[in-house]
Structures are given as structure tokens and as C-alpha cells.
Amino acid sequence: MPLKRFKNIFVLIPAIIVGLAILAVMSGWLWETPPTPPAPQAVSLIEARVVEAQSSYEIIGVLDVEKKVDLLARVSGFLVSADFVEGSTVKEGQILFQIEPDQYEAAVLAAEATLLSAQATLAKAQLDFNRTNDLYLKRASPKSDLDTAQSALDVARGNVMAAEAALSQARLNLDYATIRAPFDGYVTETEFYRDSLVGPQSGTLASVITQDPIQVSFGVSDKFMAATRLGNGPLPGQRLDNILVRLKINGESFYPEPGELIYVAPRVDKATDTVKLKAEFKNPEGTLLPNQIVTVHLTAKVPPKVLMIPKPVVMSSLQGNFVFQAVMGPAPGAPVGSPEYLQAKVTLVKIGREYDNGYEILEGLKEGDQVISLGLMSGGAMLRAGSPVRIQDEGQRPEVGTSGVPAKS
Image 1 (tube, rainbow, N blue to C red):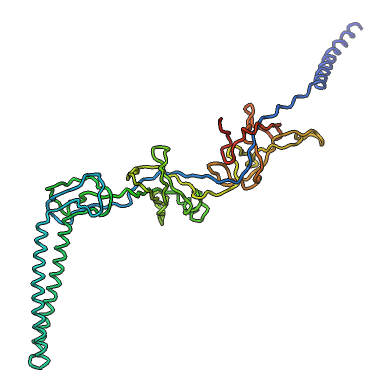
Image 2: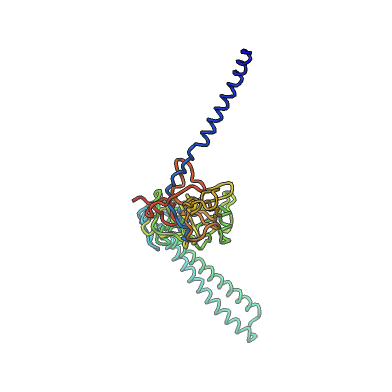
């Protein structure tokens, strides 16, 4: 018997130990202090407002002259003068090259003499025809004499016309011997100077270009252009007549004068799938130079007004885009009648276009609605629905239509 009692005791001891452990755990669960709610997160609010949507589009462009004329020698001869400074400005009609004119002046004199002789022959032939015609009418001359007189008159008239044409060509050649600036502009460098032999085979003697105004050429996606022509394109202003063109030079510096869109290609470039555009800029100081690479900055002349909020306040989830609003309410899942506190509320929104200064809001918010713009992160974790919040000082609230980050004082 004593041995059996000891065996029963050994069986009861583990059961007692397990029971005591369960009681200890249950006591701890029953007497555990409820966790304290997290401290309210400090946040700032911003209102959804109808503001001007600021948008821009940048692309590389190349500057080109509005006018360029290559000066060619249309007659042959030695240059007797090349009166200009390379790279200088010239005036319309200014003499730039002079080919020796002597031979062409002599050709004009010879042509004038030939014309005078032909005119005299024509006058004589006219008189002969008149006399022969009178005799023929009086039946004193045969028809053959009249025909001969008519033929001589026609030949004389043809000779006069040929002489007049030769004189015009001689005068034209004399005029070609003087090469003038076709318009106000700049003259380029030249490889031909006084006593150089030039002619039609010499190629370009020099070029005259105008830099005021100057043009910039650039290309945009054919898809962009198709949508823009329909009045709903992604280019700033959404319509061609509402696009303002500016230039960036030297990195971020803007050229002070805005440009005007003057040309849209009627077809797509097959090699690049782009549509070529040209804009014109005033360039009175010659700041912009032909063939210069620039950044073309497109904005809207009249920006559209849309309901907008800053980009940083919009977040995404599987359910869609959403924002946080600060509202009064009980804790999520709390019984009816529980105390209310200021907390973060998730509001789903439908966004439209993305602009430089924010997102267009199509659904979910109305003008004047306030959303949380600062304080979305706390301790490395994002604010959650129902989290308690408190409003920061009003002086920290960002301006409407900005990035949502308050300016530093």
C-alpha cells in the first residue's frame, strides 16, 4: 500500500503543476492592463480648390534662321571688290561683290547698236510694204510683190524683237555682275576676295541670313498631336491655339521673349513618328544663334481651371486612389455611443489629369473639402484609417495648388 500511495502522488503532481500554470496565465489575461491608444498624430490640412492647372512639356529643338540666301555668281569674271566684313550686318541692296563690269557694259552697248539697226531696217520695210500695198490696190503691182514686201516686214519685226531680247540679256548680265544683299541681315564668311575668278561653277560666294526673327524646329509624338487636334491632347493648353512656346538656354535660364507657334507639319515623319512644329521668336540682340540646341518649353496661354489637390496627399491601394480626411467619429468597431475623437478617414477619389501643381479630382471630393496634407507618416508607418489625429498650427498649412509642403520661414 505505501508504494501504491506514492505512485498516486507522482500522478497528481504533474496535474497540479499544469493547473497552476493555467491559473497563472488566466490571471495574467484577466488582470492585464488594456493597452493605451496611440497618441494623436499631428497633421496639417489643405482644401481642395478650383485653381489654374499648371502644366508644361519640354522637348529638344534646334534654332534655324527665318531667311537664308546663298549668293552665287551668275556671270563669269574677276572680282574687283568684295566690300563687306565677314559676320557683319548688311542692309538690303548693299553691294557685296562686284565682278569686273567692262565686258558686260560693252555687250550692252553692242546690243543697243544692234537694236537701233534692226529698228531702222523695220522702218524701211514698213515703208516698202506701204508703197507696195498702195500699188497693189491700184492694180499697178502684182500680188507677188506685196507678198515679198510683207515677208520683209515680218523679218524686220523679228529682228527687232531678237535685238530687244539680246539687249535685255546684256543688261541682265551687267546687273548680275553686281551682287547685292537681298535683305537686311548678316553676311557669312567667304573664300573669294578681290581678283578671284568666279562664275556659275564657283558655288556659294557667301550667304546672307536673318536672325531676327529666328525660328525653332521641334517634333512631338504623332499620338500627342492627334489628341491635341481634337482639343483634348496631353500637350499644355490641350489645343494648338492655346500653346505658349518658350525657350530654355544655358540650362535653366528662360529666354525672355515668348514665341509664337507658326507651323505644324501636315504629315508625320516616318523615321521618327513625330510631327514637326516651328515657333518664331524675336531676336533683336542676336542672342539666339542658328543651329543652337535649345530646350523648348510648352505651357498653356490660358491654363484650365480644375478642382485640384497636391500630388503628395494622393495614395493608392487595391481599391483605387484615396486621401485621408480629418473627421470626428468613434473608434472603428466601437459600440454605439462611444466617445468620438478626431481621426483619419479614408476617402476614395477619382483623379483626372496630372498637372505640375497637383492632380485633377473628378470624383470623391468637392471644393472646400479638407484633406490631410502633412503628417501622413508616423514612426516610419503610414497613417491608418481611424488613427487619432490633431491639427497642427494653422500657420503651417500649405497654400492651395502647391506641393503640399509648407514654406520655410
